Length: 306
Image (cartoon, rainbow, N blue to C red):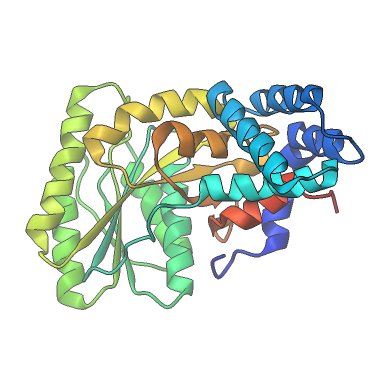
């Protein structure tokens, strides 16, 4: 967990989903005998929790095989096994790469998903870990986007590189990376345009921005985070698929997790998009973006209500 990430905050953020569909899953397992009917009921509940049909089927089949191979007998044992399988399912294939000089994070996503606030929260989190952070206002097409990011930069206590409305986003980000390299900043977090996801010009712009980072600094590392709204669940996933190829996304920031009873979308995101969830938003405060911990998430999802 990150500096601001603690188990209580995650548990609080998952309360709606833990007491909703995943609470029903827990209740079905506790005190039950393991039967074929129980597996069918689990699959149904996982689908209702926004896990998605394919992922729900896969998880339940994994659970069935593991229960059989370990010769488990009780629902309690099956519950602990399900937690373990969910955590394994959500584990990232590689660690986050912020090794560059500077490390550059591009943040993409359609308007309304919490992109700007996520950038500020990310800045606050890494500043709290002792990194020198610079923001780049690359969403130059949306009216007031730069001003909004500037307000949040002030709250996070980090500087910002900006240009006028309508400026070339790739040029703004190029300047920010150059500035960071010259001034010894560790991390540049870049806002990007958030117009409709199905417009080819946006896709072209994102690809151009990625190239501009490498032109600005040969020693920069690049991670590209796609911001999704957990409340929109499966709709967010289908929307996201169109961003990924053009922008080369490497991870997901899932916002508003505290506002949904269908936290299963976290599991579906990894399965459908092939990208790890790197951060989750569990509140409105500047310190409410947390580094994603699969084991803590699985425990918070399927644990007992405090």
